[in-house]
Image 1 (cartoon, chains in turn purple, blue):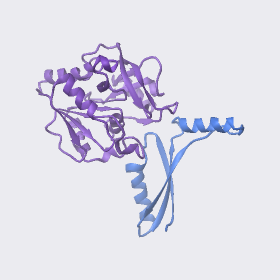
Image 2 (cartoon, rainbow over the protein chains, first blue to last red):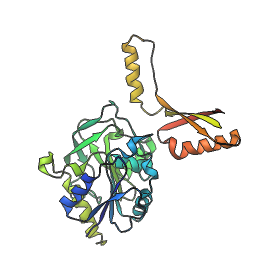
Image 3 (cartoon, each protein chain N blue to C red):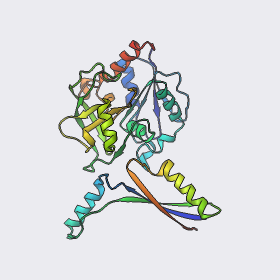
Image 4 (cartoon, one colour):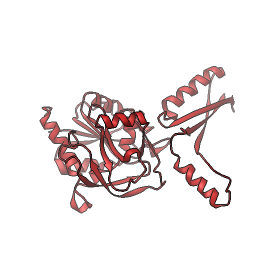
Length: 226
Length: 83
């Protein structure tokens, strides 16, 4: 069985991620308290959305120093799959596990809507059940998803194929190069603003998030870690 | 006791949507002479320190570790006798 940890900070959502793993994958998943430091018994970590520590100072800036981040860093360094969704993405940026930073949406509004995304690569552990170039529908819900990085970093992201998801059609927040999700150089740490865990059944409006989770499980089984 | 007043600003190269919105509001109110506006934040920190040199080093460390995100922000600060 592939074991998932979902770290919960004060102000995090998180149960949506827990339910998605249970419902879609039927694999063991635990909400993990932010005070826990050891995540070595887990195969993957999902940093969920929400407003950790009230988004005080900057989104993710305070969560970055929570004890559980030690375990997240360790998991990332060992090559385990680490995902940050929404606020989780902001935390990964603040922690330096992914390059760049988040700014307020360029139109200043909190945007909560379905969004079309282009899947830029199907060669990653998170996207192998998608087809490169396909468009999927995944909800977004954020006020600060306007991804920023300098030109040099952007060139690197493009060159290394680290841009995983781009907004298709209208860019909902003004992010650089319409970036919705990026992965680290090694390909095991992914951050994205859209919420695949909120699109896993047709009654949710879309089931396009299912393959995000099945991709991870398939990768884990095929990588021999199972 | 020393009081540090820290100003955090977005780098000039980083778009400031709040500043733009406020500038447009000022223009709409008839302040046509306003051509640019940038927002930022101010933090006041009171700290125990034996001398200003020590305080300066500590405040710099605070900015670099937590208070400022160097990817998009810059900072400056001043120190005074605090109470």
